Length: 194
Image 1 (cartoon, one colour):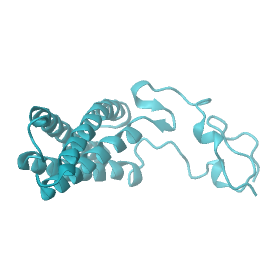
Image 2 (cartoon, one colour; image 1 turned 45 degrees about the vertical axis):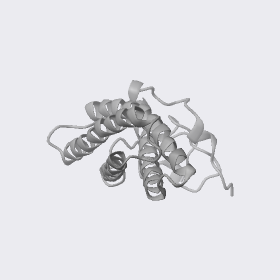
Image 3 (cartoon, one colour; image 1 turned 120 degrees about the horizontal axis):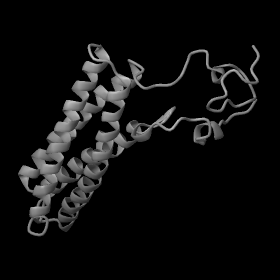
Image 4 (cartoon, one colour; image 1 turned 90 degrees about the vertical axis):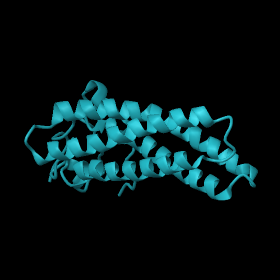
């Protein structure tokens, strides 16, 4: 029995292009969200370590700068994640449903995170050359952003893993049956026997 299936996951053949939403079975929003979540949490960790270490340690300044660069990457990808998430919400959810309410909660938290991250980054760039460690105000703001992005991610995860939002699968998909043959996108029903 074969142990690995690689090509079906990596192929775009047979997938419908959905613009900013990505491809069928390969939505753009979920993978984009991983970067800002990781960036904001890591930046907060860098800032806390920098603040605890203080000016007596040269590497505290380097962590302060690392947090700044991490925020730049997080903010840049955050904008793309927000746009792709908005496209998903507009095309795939219906008003008056629990899913839409969960989307609204998720979006409100994440938009708040993005606005706070932009404020944090602006403040960082202003203090970048003069501060020797992460300024306490920026440190506190970074920790708040890390906590909020984690909370927002919980709501996003709930949409996928509890409600199946934007998930394109079926319990009777051939991939769940024993077979030596991989099933590619758009091939459900071909070459299959029970």
